[in-house]
Image (cartoon, rainbow, N blue to C red; front, top):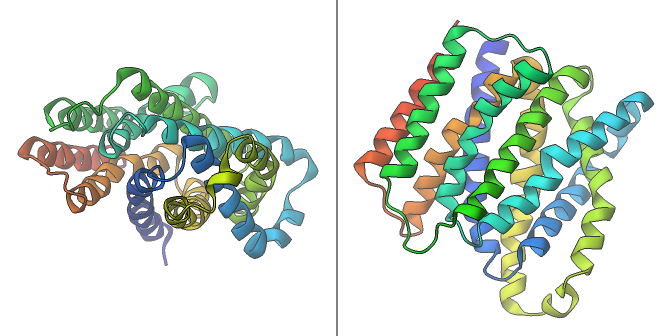
Length: 288
């Protein structure tokens, strides 16, 4: 399969997986607190990746481990907790929409800190995508009482973390296999996540049926939405560009809003318009 076709297939698969992650976080929070959810997400994923990718760690040069640790911090560890905390006050749909700011942050940080060159049409595409995002935010229907500006800032910080991670991988880890990067990330994060989990009241709550039910959602979130998705994402960065890879965040709100409809959240015409404008932005940002 040609690289041009493969990158679009991976982009769409990632949109489906990560677009579903927000509803999984929402369901997980029904029986867990944000720190338990974030920790279990990392722990489940870490054990899964060690089963399928432990041997791949040997291919990581010793000099690259410092970048593995930094990308673990920015790419998963910090955002895992920020999104869980944010969704206690901000709806899953709004979180997915705010997540669409990642490509703009990727462009800005890539240009300022990493020497990334970009074309005019990429900038226009990103701005177009942000216009679509604004339509979704300001013209969409909000669940009454669910939005909190201060908690929304946590999502914005997470997008900055993602943007930093994308640029770091492209610049310093392009020669490392995606499975090795992902497995290495979670090996680094496993012990801190376990420590955070057991500093909560998890040991007393884990026998409660609602907690166990919530853990099933987090299990899916950890293995599919974090482990498998990260491998695909790092592969996408390596065969495309940081801007293209981060464009997946334009498609995520569409999937998240569909899940919102399933969970009795209705979309209005402005939200649909916003989704359409976002797709135009993806096209423009990646037009040669």
